[in-house]
Amino acid sequence: MGVQRLVAALLVALVAGCGPAVAPTDEQVPSFRPARPEPYAVGVRHFVVDPDGSRPLPVTVWYPAEPVALPHATAPATTPVTAGPTGGGATSGPSSEATAGPASEATSGPASSGATSEPVPWPGAPVAAGRFPVVVYSHGLHSLPELHAPLTTRWAAAGFVVAAPTYPRTNLRARDFSRADVRNQPADGWRLIRHLVRLDARPGDPLAGHLAVHRFAAAGHSAGGFTTAGMFTSGHPPRLRAGIVVAGGGMAGSFAGPVAPLLFVHGGADPIVPESVGQAAYARSLGPAAFLCLPGQGHGEYLTPGRPGFAQVLATTTDFLRWTLYDDRRARDRLPVDARLPGVTTLTTRALPGRA
Image 1: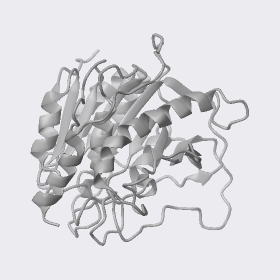
Image 2: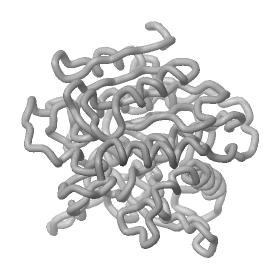
Image 3: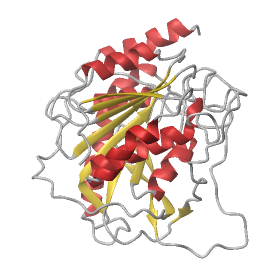
């Protein structure tokens, strides 16, 4: 399918919009302790939201864990597959739609010296002590949550619970794949948030008492970026405090109050969702916002460790999440410095608070 036809089909699926988010009204959010600087071990678990409903939602959750004794055997790890978040290309990582994914090009660049090694998630590891903010991460077309583990596991190691749904009709293994079903995914994201709020109060669940249920962020790549934007509709509960849109754009009704900080990440030469689409969403958004551009890059190769820009994307998104979900002013102050690498990234900001 040609690029213009693919983009047009995606946008047609999105302009119809989505229904308003529905969730309980939140009380005022208290201040939160700073995130610890040392990385956590990472655990992983899986469950299904509404398994008997019309849209069962399998979910992968990465979370800060207590250190586990490592056996001599090789640790479990994410297994690359031959299609990326939106299929079409033979890729080996969390790639993008068509052929322009994070691992689809053989370019080389400066090593990601600022990035930590990918944490090894251990199934069922005990949850670390304390409460942790939650990030709902949305995959793109023809993708799966585990293809984004290089980013999501590092967020978990930085002190966030990351819950990634496998959307019913846009995932890599969907039998009745439908690009138009993206319009229904923001409601799925909110369904997951409500489930996690209930789970935090469920006696005996390993995550009970560990979720900061007034501190959610939404993030996603490509169609998952559009899904993320679609969760910020009029009347959305203030428990959704921030959003990260990677290689995506806005939906009809996106960016209505309450105002929440937003970070946009986009390749300057993205052939699938052009940078202009992301820039238009950035211009439409309300309140504090930042636009991290990777000139000359495509639809997501910067999400692969070791590729040019990965270290900056990881540092910027982690700073942003620590600022918006942990009230970490030092992370907010680091963000402009961590985001910029001459020749690799540029950063535009609007209404970001100044240094303390």
